[in-house]
Image (spheres, rainbow, N blue to C red):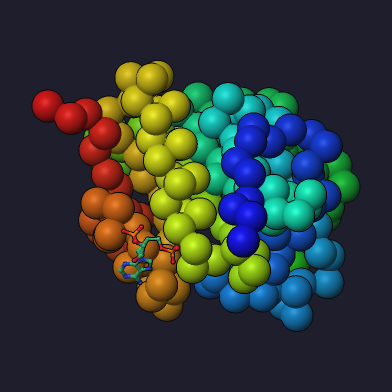
Length: 203
Ligand SMILES: CC(C)(COP(=O)(O)OP(=O)(O)OC[C@H]1O[C@@H](n2cnc3c(N)ncnc32)[C@H](O)[C@@H]1OP(=O)(O)O)[C@@H](O)C(=O)NCCC(=O)NCCS
């Protein structure tokens, strides 16, 4: 068995990584049946990290194809501000705001483009970095997720990050268990998801 190669991700990977995002977009399972526009999820959760936070963006390449990613950012507040100026405007120009009446899953995503959910002050104070990780089924369960997280922790620590958080659907038991195994714990609860955080300073 050849282990997938982990390398930095860049703009050339976007199409493949958007597909990974869609194929894992229903709380870890294939979300392709949920959305009419197959690129929307990736445009929100993958694109800005690869394009605006490339120092913390990695792809797992399996048989020549990008099949997974871990995408992070050191400073969530700065990243939110950069998205506001350099990422959301283009998407807003291409999608009509459903305002307060999102009628479909696509509309709910488009509402996110217009009114992105910002991390709470309490979370960013202790865990200023954040990330997303998704692997296609073919490379799940082989330790690749742990390797990718080690890579992310290493570059975040090199950037003196005191802590990192992510948002996970509560029904995604596998991912919640994976994160607990890596030392994350729940730091904030929402309706269908929890924010999990991990401190990175070793002292
Ligand atoms: C969740 C995910 C990133 C985990 O990566 P992975 O490479 O499949 O992880 P593995 O199953 O190989 O497990 C890695 C380690 O975590 C542990 N682990 C995994 N799932 C666990 C669980 N539910 N409970 C406890 N430990 C768990 C494994 O025992 C293993 O430990 P080890 O390295 O000490 O042997 C990956 O399965 C995935 O992308 N799933 C679909 C998308 C998704 O849900 N993404 C997260 C969205 S928030």
